[in-house]
Image (cartoon, rainbow, N blue to C red):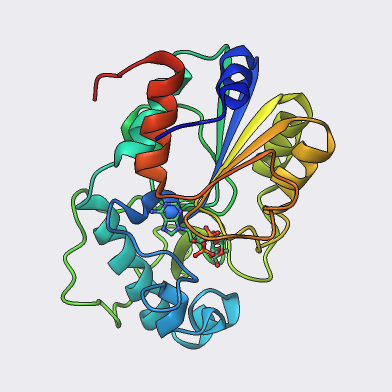
Length: 256
Ligand code: OAD
């Protein structure tokens, strides 16, 4: 894979790199994305049927079951070469911040610390009434098939339904994480936007703002997105292949 030498030079010279990721980064770990026409999660479901407070209130078993199915899928898979190349990069640039829309923990399991999860986490459920965190039983959830109907547990303190610790449509991003992400955008000089359709706001504003502030924006995606016209470099390809090749071009082969 050949890259523009200017792009590699800018990466090697960058002081603060943000890696902004979406579902495409976990795709090569076998986790479906949301908007791919044939295999995306939202191609089989209407998001409003599963990813809203209203859906959870009406059908807690369906919504909890769907998220438990995803949590199981994440727990039985592994970080892929994209997660590994990003983690390896963190050792070579002065500062690297991962800001993800993903609710899995694959960046952490590849070795990144302090990941900013804009849309929350599958692994940190909380009470839908009192907001207290709920400790999930250890191990992979014991659910059959697609787990479509699993009643959520009750809160140990107030008895309310426990809900997934993710951000649903219509909910604000957690203030502290969004504040940290915006702060990072103000100080970065290079941003990767990897595996995101860049259509869900406010998260999607990040690479646009970075470009506006003069940062070098490198997009990695097999498909075009709205970000194409403003990105400094558009790299068409799978995140695992492209990120491993970029790392190699900048710093040579890395240990996996
Ligand atoms: P999408 O499903 O909208 O977009 C995934 C992107 O990844 C698409 O642009 C694909 O072309 C690209 N892609 C697919 N396979 C890839 C691969 N192997 N390597 C690189 N790119 C690949 O997912 P997101 O942009 O993450 O929000 O979606 C944003 C938010 O919308 C999600 O966090 C979720 C969803 O609704 C909530 O649930 C609140």
